[in-house]
Amino acid sequence: GPKQQLFHRGGVVVQLTQEDGRLIIKAVDPASATSLFEKHVEFKRQKCVSNTLVVEPTIINETTAKIYLKSEECQTLLPALNGVVNCPLLVERNGGLHQVNAGYDAATKLYVVNTVEVPVIGVEEAVENLNSLLVDFRFKTEADRSRALASFLTPALKFGGFITGPVPVEVAEANDSQSGKSYRQQLVAAVYRERMAVVTKKAHGVGGMEETFQKHLLDGCGFIQFDNVRGKLDSQLVEAFMTTRGTFPVRIAFYPEAAVDPSKHVLFISSNGFESTKDLANRSLIVRIIKRENYNYPLHDGLDLVEFVFNNHVRFLASVYAVIRHWH
Image (tube, rainbow, N blue to C red; front, side, top):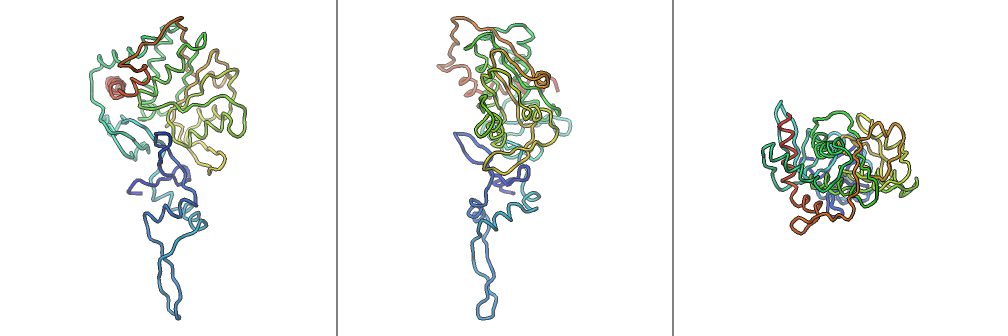
C-alpha cells in the first residue's frame, strides 16, 4: 500500500500495468498473486521436526492467495483507486486551487501519470488557444460551437470535483460522413494527453458493445467514445451508468465483478443522425457540424491537429486550467 503498487477498486485488488502504450488498471488474480506477493513479503510455515516446531520458508498456493485477496485487510490497508489520468489534475483544496502533478492522489483516488508541470497562463491567451482548436470546423449554429468549447472544459471540471453531479454524454452529429465529428472529439481527449477508448455498436453478448464499454471502465479509461453509431442507441446499462450516484457495478467474462466510480469517466458519441431513447437524449449534449466539401485539414508542424495537440497538450491544458482559475 505505501509503495502504491497494489490498490483496491470496488472490492477487487488491482495493480497498474502497461498495455498498448498506456497505464491501465488490472485485477490481480490468485494465480499471479502467488508470485506477486512474494515481491513484498516472505512467507513461512511451522513444521514439526523431532517433536519440535520449527519455522521454514514456504510458498503459497492459489487457494491461499484467493483468501488473502478477499480479506478485509485488502480493503482497508490498500489505497482505493478510481482511475488513471495522463495529465495533472486541478482540484480545490481548502478553498484554493491545487495542482496534482504526479502519483496517487488520495482525495480524488486517481493515479496521475505525468512528467511535466502545467504552467499558469493568462485567460486571454487561454481563450485564444482554445478557440484556435475549432477554426477548421463549420458548426450548424453558434450554440453548437459554444457546446464544443464547453467539451474542452468538462473533463477537468469533472475529474477535479468541481462538478459533483452527472455530466451529459457529448454527442457529435454531422450532416454527412467524413465531416470530422469523431476527429473533433478526439481533440478533447488529446488536450488531456489521452486517446479515446473506442466502442463500436455491435450486438449484445461476448465482445458486444456493452461488454467492450465495461472493459474500458475496468481498465480505468477516462475518455470513452461510442464511434460512428448507426441506428438507435438503446442501452439501459449506459443510461444507468450516466445517472448513478456512487459506484456502478461492472462485470465481464473472466474478470471479478468490481464497482467503478462514474465520475472518473466522460462519454462521447459520434453519429450521422443520432437516434436514442428519450432518457438518453435528455442526458445528451449535442454538437452539430456541417461537412466542408473538398476541405483538407491543415497540418501543424507536419502533424494533423489531434497529434499536434497530443504532443503539445501542456499548452492547451494550461488554457483549460486558466479558464477554470478565472471562473473560480
